[in-house]
Image (cartoon, rainbow, N blue to C red; front, side, top):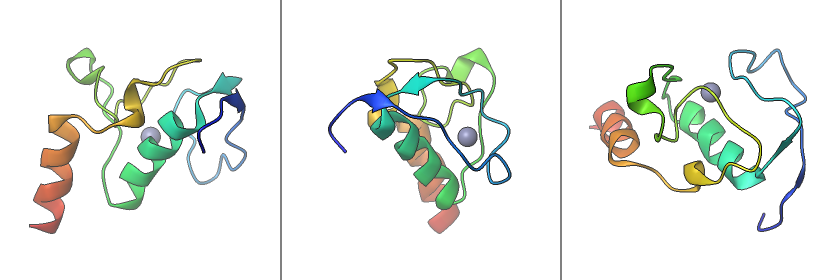
Length: 80
Ligand SMILES: [Zn+2]
């Protein structure tokens, strides 16, 4: 998954809250979705705009490829 391509999240029944549209970096989005898989929720306030779990994605975005301190803190809290 190291290649950018047009990609659309196809299963809206699984994840209908995130504002994705046409073309995204797959790693960016998949990292975010893996966050849900471990139990994290979306964040929608601008304070969390740089977090992987920020609920809004944008085209060509890659900042979610890695976890922020806030993401790690939240994930650790779940499994502590
Ligand atoms: Zn999400």
